[in-house]
Length: 370
Image (cartoon, rainbow, N blue to C red; front, side, top):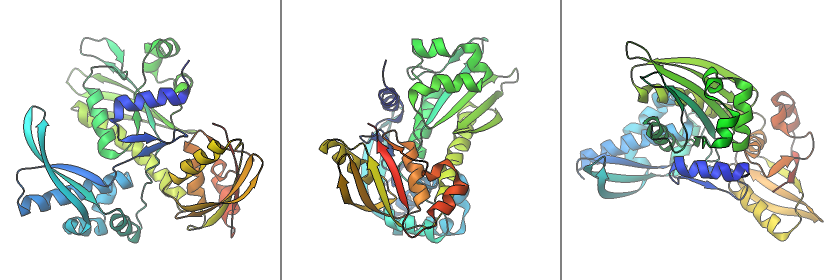
């Protein structure tokens, strides 16, 4: 049987078009958050400025995870002056949906964009992001039902793929192989049985689960129900829309915004810009040590790290963070190679962790389990 990491990687390749990378610990790192490609009619100044504004708005949406920030006063001012945030520009042409299209590729300055948002009190979502595993059952016009898999030719797959790419959210579609079908029947999937969906999802190792069902009403409307599972939280909501794209985008937007909000809250628990000590056991070989450092450097919240002590199969590292220690532990919880070795993991209980982390130099204890 494939490992969860191998299954996860195969699903990502199908869905997310290479904009994700896997660290050695299989954390999900989203690249290109500050890059945007916009269709343009010409290379004229007015069209270029329009593309800058549209592109910066798309980038802000990707790195904040919520539509509401686009109406923030500071963001609106930045959009009017979008050219000031541009770092690099290039033009190209290619066929898009059968039509020759001129495109401008814009790279925005990460430091300037992040600085603008943080000055406005708007949290920035790190590029280490939780995945959403999507179980979707569709009732077709003829009354038949199907569960959408990674190789389905249903038009909803393109809608999901586009949303994932545009919003920088790792969305996984299950393989729907024999094991999936044996563990989760059509009727059980349609009923959104929480326990059954959690069981079948375990093999994928995803960080959150979105289960949904959709049918077309006699009047042509799409009626659906959704269940979003993130850790021990369960949110159930319904949808009523006229077209499939709007229907899917609304549910995916709500789920991804909830994840962004969770990590935004994590960035406020405890003091930020701290130095911490991280003790890691289970570092048996030199390659383990190399992989551990490479893994930790993938976290945007880690400014610097250095070895403070080596003791057999244990290592103590000094880390300097750009955010809070609690946010760092939340990102660690998304990985699968560093697990808390003692009950000192603040992500277990935010009320306890806030007190634990309110110290000059927190100490964390984890184990390398790759």
